[in-house]
Image (cartoon, rainbow, N blue to C red):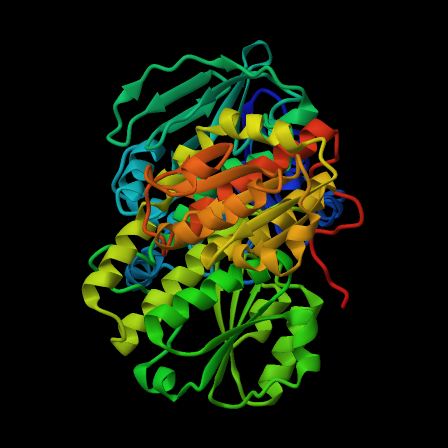
Length: 612
């Protein structure tokens, strides 16, 4: 993944391909490439790094042709390199493919194709698609037929742009769980493929939005659409009412809002191929055997900022299901605390970027003392992923806004799955309990979507506190962990001073700061302890506080004690933190919007903290 463009028309393809890719740079990527049909053959040019590297490569040797595809890659299979960059060419040189998504059964298909005589030049799953289409071209009458046959073999997600030397002037597009759109400029005889609107907006605002399972064939003569069985589909174009600048955010006002809304997909992708009810949790390429886990004395979870808050939830999950002691530590303090680390220690590190300096320093310390390191990160090929002994990737997709949202929820999903995996290996929790947890985890994307549909309700609550100078978040148990992340989200983008406290700690000093009109955000999704939190709500209300509660369950005891109550979808208290943070993200976002803050680029902050 991450950005796809395609051109079929009367003009030259390359100018659009490069312009379209430049419009998709915001998505994040590690390499770029193009493939153009030039003189009867496919000319493919690729470069690692920024798009400028590809442009420099093409400045002296630019292919000329009216059909082509392009791609900016964010690595999922194989390190960032020229060989792993897209597009990928089939072994016979007849097919070029650009692909977003993940093919889950690529290893099986690769083995089959190798037995059939196909050679592979990359570590990617995408090269399997190019060779598979070539394999079926041997027996099918058209490129569309061969693509249909190949798609029937694929398991996973994809948005595809397919170029063939056998059908000059035409491109095939296909999508499943990954966006792909078709742009049309009939007056110029030009048709386009793209993974997002910004790539097209300078050429046309008339687009077709492809549905899951659909294919298209575009040429200078028009656009045709088909079902996965090859049946023709009639579609109507839509006029996109976006300016180029807003289009880069997919129509959202800010990247942060876009990324909040992407969380159902991101959490789903992180769990896909790893979690299925009725089956053991599976992490490809990672081995934690019963002997090793029984040998462990303790686990450290080490991270910074938002990732540290995810670690607090992970600590609780792993301890509850395995009985292994877990400590969650701030990475910037870890080295200086002289931690007791040895060969019987597992260090779990969390980092969205995989480049956080303090986290990397903790990794080096742990490895120097013989500990094993497991990294949970969003970026393939990052320093952390290279330094760690084992890696779990969160398939959140590029996160652009400085305030982390979908990276956090996918880290939580990964940690919950890891806790279940450990428990299954150790047989440390009842099988029926683990199955219930897996079922609850499986329902998370739908539950998050339910919360996002209440955006207007959360927006109203955010307006209430947008003019405040300070406020408090309180919670108990896992609610307290989420309170800390909710407080961080609000302060980092709205600049409202706020602090999170264990609800029972207020009366040990901090309650002195409660004045008439002070807002307190109470988290009470842990129903089993909501009676205690309700008592703490009474304490602050008796001092004049106004309370906004986020809770789970119609009979939650906090409901009647609060001025405003937001009800979360019903989930087990154990896994509810993944959904509990979502309304708080929107709450912080709209508070910042009402204050006129630069939401995506809050002052003094950077997306990746590479200094200690």
